[in-house]
Image (cartoon, rainbow, N blue to C red; front, top):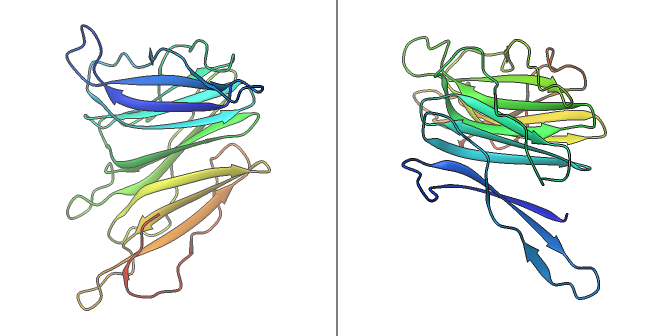
Length: 212
């Protein structure tokens, strides 16, 4: 197949938002697009919100965040023709509330999200991540990626390249009363996702708002 599309919405008989997947195939000779019927992926008791997708070969990984603040993933090994059971990723429930991201290599799938489990003085979020073997989807212990607990870290983006996973997020650690600023920070991992490189600021503009 050539493309995968996700959306949140309701279908026949649904009373809440679910995650739907559409596979799009291009016919090589005519360049015509064939759009499959949408397939419902999620079946959580809660409304389903943000979605993301990663494709490696014939494996398709779909992640989503629920309104209550949990992260789920489902996987296909046949190009999206069918998907296995949904798997809960986060090990502290109802705290994923500030964006999510997904990436995959040939051996592992990684997810990251903004998480409020360590709220200190308000509703600060940290960036947490977890990963699993692509054949089992057995996730380990969630890991905090940001190495500063100052203010907010949220809304991650993630990409896998040559076996290394690069994670980016919006970070408020350098904001002050005289300079309200959102920076973009990054860290990377090339293993099981339990250790990440030290955080590094990406943007060279030292004021204003930067978005991943």
